[in-house]
Length: 565
Image (cartoon, rainbow, N blue to C red; front, side):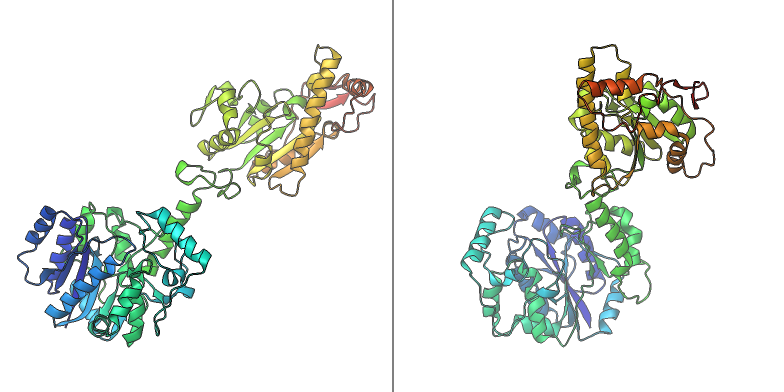
């Protein structure tokens, strides 16, 4: 006894001819259906290529369209021809023109001979199906689908919605329990002939002609009426992506296909020369009588689907632009934001770069432009310091900067004077480390040579901005690592918080701080704050600065603050 193959072909007829010849020369009869839309010259050339094989024949042609009855009708015609002309066939295997045998034909026939009464067809009820993509499961059996989903999508959707609105439901023929499964099956002669010769076949055919995607439900449902033993799986290796589209196998999938131990794989790229040459040789090696086990390669496909749907952390790309708050990581790597430090310390970015293994930038979001480390005007990924380009999409500017420098931690300075568009973004980013010295922005204002009324207005503007930022940083939605000090608290003991910050950035470093960065001149700052109060503005973020607390406070040449007596 042997197995017969039905091949459904519409493209890459040269490859389909190679596969048909491989099976036919191995002793298996092959019935081929060629889509009626294939041109006459191509069809005749296909027939001519296989004309020397007596056990290869061509069935009645149908114009096939995805999701329609035509695919079932073509399968029925080819199956009837197979059963009529080849009495020695015990199992009939439905395959496509893009299928490729992965193991010698004898291994498949031996496998089926050991299971003479077993039908291999994926057949599960609609309640057990979790892979239907498109939102229609049981409704594909109770609604009518006279319009093509691919060519008449608008009519298709409107007609489905109309039937739902009016409550229309078709009656499922008595005795049928709708089942779904892969189109590619291997049925015994007894089961297949019972389906095709059933006295109620006209009734079933009329019903399934209005079912959506009947090629995935017709044989899957009717086989349950006649089969004595069903293994609800397909012997054909077919993998689908998250959109329900089949994966295409290329030459570099050779070892992957071998590990699956499956008999046939679909869908093979027509130009995968290495695959066709490897698997269609008569001396191809494979584990003797190994059980087909596509689960052995499921892990790789799961990773592929995850990479396609989630992407790499922090990578934004046009083909998979994420929904808000559904990104696979807002950024690709940890980074640090230093708010107010450059106002309190002179050349803080240069000092920090000596103690941490990181790239330390200046004010990346300064109004006049991005201050890249080293004074560069261009950074990795062709990021420019131009403020107009940066402010067109500040979030993309930051994520691109971190992505293009992954492997090297990035740090940058920040203040209320800078563009505030990313405040929520960084606060809700688990990769962010945000250190804040509140009120430090007032130190440069205290040294400005400007009318005090102008200074007061600017102080009020900056304080309002900082309060808004602090409200974000103290909200329940924050995921960043946030530390906040007032400027009064920080100048009392700068070494301890600086050491904590540096240890977090470079946890493996054992170097202890021996000197703090040089602090800016503080003389007159408490009086400046008092003058703001006298002019009607209430400083809220500087901390407790008594009028004489900062008088005489300087930073010595080693950076350690001391009091001049």
